[in-house]
Length: 287
Image 1 (cartoon, rainbow, N blue to C red):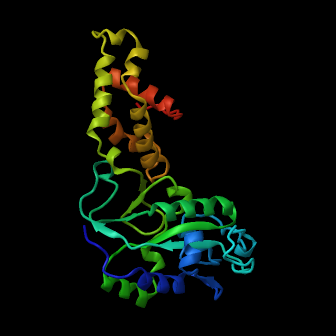
Image 2 (image 1 turned 90 degrees about the vertical axis):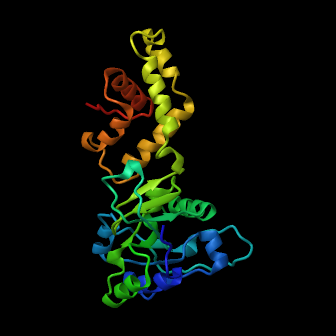
Image 3 (image 1 turned 135 degrees about the vertical axis):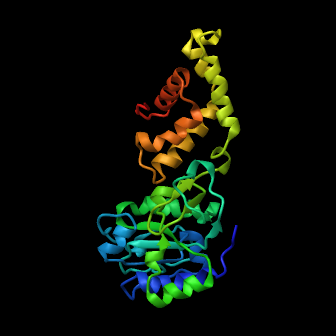
């Protein structure tokens, strides 16, 4: 793992200069940031920028002065009254060479990772829920981690085109973001233990044998399904959600093949897979 060479502000300030097409920019101090969670906010009216961020239309704006912080430390006029539709928390990435097994074929080497801070991430998630469709809360992180690339992108004016912008709508339930390209393409994931979890698939394998025709439990599908613990359902559900719902893999038969290969391909596992996905509320035929 290669850690970033530059500090966060060295990336944040030139990014904002290239991104926001308005002089009305709000950058809260440390006290405000602890309440709001973001580094900088402003108005972006360029549809091309929003398409790069994964939005078809420019979000309507919000005036933060209408927010009630419920804090005795600030007066009602502490927040700006000018319109804002993009609120960013900038992060420096680490560069990784080894690609986790579930992402092989979908992430290149090297790729990049940012890890979300628990309290800050919760604050940003709540803020996004309050904004609804009036604005977007997102992380901003470069697709590089060295000084030379930073200076080159500052000079050629292409920091936005070489940054990743995962929105809180996509990553609110996750703890990290993996990516290898700019824009909004990447993988959100939660606790890393379930990504390459031999124990999880070991439980599935035991349940598969429990469903075998020559086993006592094989006479009852219900008995076989009981071999999967509630914890296994939850962990498999998170894996599917991270890869195919909140990630960027299309939810198709082709993209599901890596997961199916983990589960096995005989008839008993096929049945187990179908019932498992029904339990997760996913109506999908894997064939």
